[in-house]
Image 1 (cartoon, rainbow, N blue to C red):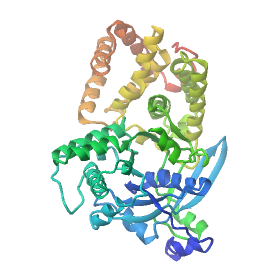
Image 2 (cartoon, helix red, strand yellow; image 1 turned 90 degrees about the horizontal axis):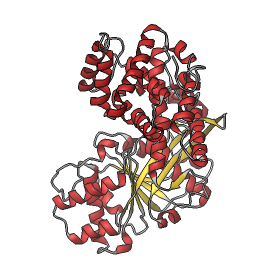
Image 3 (cartoon, rainbow, N blue to C red; image 1 turned 180 degrees about the vertical axis):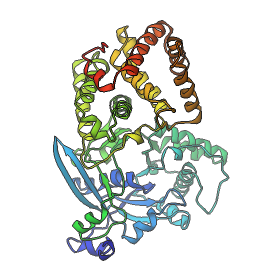
Image 4 (cartoon, helix red, strand yellow; image 1 turned 180 degrees about the horizontal axis):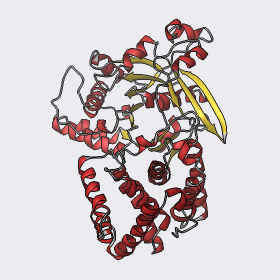
Length: 487
């Protein structure tokens, strides 16, 4: 059925309106689902709502990718289909994105990529090469071909621009990595400096890269599940076929730590985009505590209640009130009024996103590396609560006990590192003995670094929860919770 539809191309777009040629303002390294549904869509909005007039050249990030070939086959056009809930109402929007003006495979035509650095109108380099892309790799400098690593390619590109423009200060670029790595801009700059040292590049270039180029820390947030299973039905609706069709939620957030001039270059307010030029720390903390933390709690409780998706779990009449108790009472009970209102507003946004009827986010996927996630997403909130209130956060501790109870390799599928699975297997086996209190205390001490003053009380409380979980079903126990957990 799909073969009866013509592949998306200029002819289809220009049947409705002439496609405008845009001046190149940005180079993006990476052409996957996320960067297309996030950055390329943002540029589309800037162009169409704020007369930004910004085109993008897309560079494939790995030699194995197929995105470049597909973009070229579709005249660098693709469809972003956002669907979800906005203010509680179903929202759906289909947009043909035309911001990419050229797509290049650097492993086949590296000189064409270098040529982009000679463009005086170029202002930005964006990247989305996954967390693995922001890693230092020792590699020999290649004079005529693309380096394998992303930082290596970036240094090649910047050095070419530095050389072509004779080190002119105003020819520096804004470099914004979108990878989900803390302090990603700062880390990328450090790696690029190390690569420059390895290759013995001039101190003049290194100073230019440090002083004229701005490596900005960023935080990005948008759920992009990828190519839809029901693509044939959507192609029928569109009247064309799109091999790069990307589904996403309506929500987006782009937080940037950068100089004031960068704000002036991006007319985000005129385009009504959710872009923030602020300290990322509070946004990252909010995202980890609320969005990621709730995800982790939902995944563990859903496992014990035979639920399969985030939507099922967040709509459960027992689980949702328990989550609200945690957020209101233990995550933001100590905050000032304005901060508390912001946190609760974000919680409501997260709930709406989780209830998206069009995105089927499996709890099993969230349970990947759950033991590690407990350490980064739940435990820091427990520590902070104790430090501020000098008492134990009983709801959070109950949630953590539920998560540990479900991390039983003998009963459930546990997807984690071999080391963590081995630790959990011993822990679960020992928790069947009369030594529960000692075993729980040892785990809290060795794996979580529990403060000594709270260790005995916390172990006692969690063992109490554990024994209740052994004797009762989770729904019954959650029904008994109100404020502090009293079982």
